[in-house]
Length: 58
Image (cartoon, rainbow, N blue to C red; front, side, top):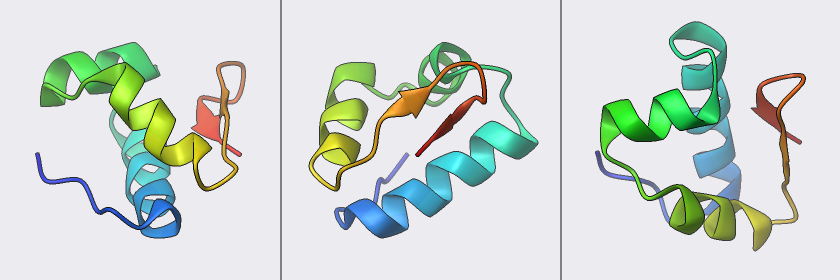
């Protein structure tokens, strides 16, 4: 899957998928063959952190 390089756009895409399609970040990464560390690092660069209890990046 192509991931946008802009952290704000990436946030929107990932949070939408987490809300609509995947019960956890691990499931999303496994299903879409995304490196979890790479994804979280890209979002961290924009100031976002994953909240597992809400299943979203904030």
